[in-house]
Length: 445
Image (tube, rainbow, N blue to C red; front, side):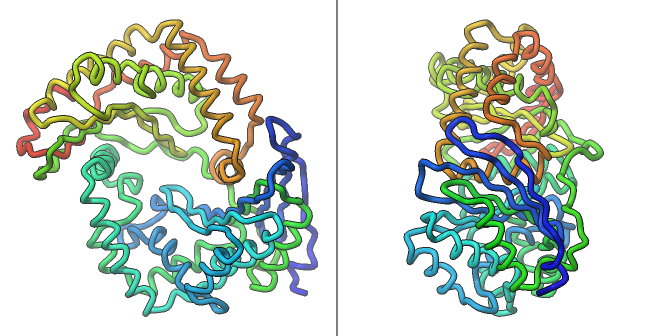
């Protein structure tokens, strides 16, 4: 047994059973590896996620896209399994396995029957700890990622969000696309990607979460055995990495960014600075977002689509990070109608900033948030994700009841306070046939 295996772990109950779930328990293993579970005794499946506290914002310019590159490479082969063996092991028991990369974390996950949890733990641990990252795999996957970038860029509705992030954040890593760029992917070497993997994928930077018909103690034993077998718990002295909270505020930049393309529709995002992820006003922001552009009854949908018939898709959204955030409005419309749609969207933003919302909008907004939260937690995958994010980027896990109470407590004055953010000078990103960004300067004045 390793030195790490001889050290004690610590276990605590994070939340009591509530709202269709069971106890939420956490164990910190030697080396700082955290394991959280939520029991859902009424289901027969388990969702397991291995969360790494690293994302695209952690990359230097020369490593842009490395986090997402690794997400691909870890499925290519380990010391024990090739790519076929990785996928077939989970699919042979009717499960599924996948991964995703975000700006502040990466997650590898599987969903299986409860009896197959040991297999899922073994496969996921193998990926996380023992991937080969061979030169051949780096080269073959380079072409796949370049195709993924091309596919993403071919969708102007997706590309405009990347354009907005670059314009809004400037040179800050938050402004870079998660996929990287063609230039950065073409120049990433095997040694650079492998070095990034070895430095970042450490036990203290990992959180393992599981939700479903799962026994916490049994899962902890399975995780501990798997990581000890891979000699991946370190020397047992490390504490878990601190959650990603706070930091110096990221600067943002108003103005117009235009990408000229031959498209049938113009696509734009108009956005202003918002709230950081842990801001207590985030519940009021959620209600505001629902009223402004969160559904078919929202102001933007009613004004732009129902009343004027100028767009098929129009909505608002909020993005929140450890040290920054933004509130955005998206629409896709006829290029000849861009100025008109922009004017309607900006008018609605400014009207809400000045007058807030009414009682009926407050009621609908709260109902939308409450229903979305509870309905979204009806499957193990959603609860597993909630556990992972709470450990990595919140450092707390509110009970569902407490979240519902926070939403219910939002007042009209709370929404009006947050709505003042909408009056800031905005950033506009536009993908269209237009060639002169100056013609849209009035929209961001």
